Image: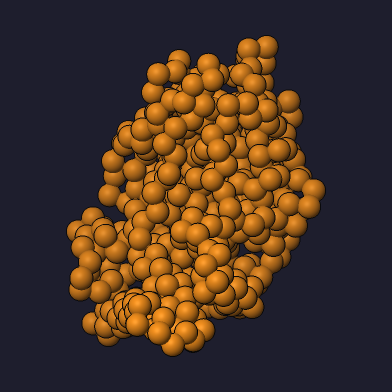
Length: 438
């Protein structure tokens, strides 16, 4: 019960700050203050505007914001998001482009379950839509999932990916980004051994911790320093009374956000100070660079406690994927069983979350996959976010991924343009380092 009160105290603090911001914004905006002009009132209103918006966004689920895409015919085609398979902890969704022939490239993007919504992949999805049929794993906020739905850990996550791949069929091209890379690898290995006809045609693994010890980072060092008991005591709480998932053990999104911000506190402090000055001067916009970035960055979701703790213990501490001893319900998943699924590894030279070598470690496990079906790429100068949604992704990596998909589908001569022609407008305003989706 104590942990439920702790959860509600955090929410009370958020609501209080949102109210203070709204009150300050209203107080500083009274017309009567014009009788005695004083910059204090403008600053008060600006501070309230930025504060109210920031704390309000922390509990708002962002929209995908992908309404149309330009087709090869030069016309705008309406994009509809539809649920293909609905599950308790996450859905398989499809971005269906109306009025155009169905693309031969079918891509499943496995999004991280790591504190931010799958909309963190918005610009990645938008960049692929002109050339692909895009499906995404859309994970739910744990605070909205009733306790009756049961647990959700790394094994359940892997089974969800297996089910989604089975649903989509063998012509699927899997693209996993960051945190889910090792579990997506395990899902494909399970299919390779048990349902080979349901294997995807290819998989692209981008900046994920297959072997966290291959190149240590601050993230991996933290996992080594803290015991599981300490971690559970420090970060796990029970969802408060006002949500459908009341009583569920979670790693709260607000607590995760405080950790994200503390990693770059000076940068965030400067960004908010500058934004307050811009609002006071009338130079800010509702959808300016700051608001686009922080509307996404501040929108956090609770993570199931079992998933977070089992990820730290089994992927980072015990290195079960790296040692090829990962099990599902007591049955070993042998990654060496992958013999036909073409695999591409993408890493960023300056990635400080999943450093170079951590994802490349997958190649050491794919002992029975012919070299002709493998490809690796290290993007020079790219940070973590840049390899899947920044300039490096758009200009360099995306074309390589599309070519890799075509080469291993047996139709290199029939490729659609991979140069971004007709590409939807870039919706990304996050810097190359971006939020940390792990």
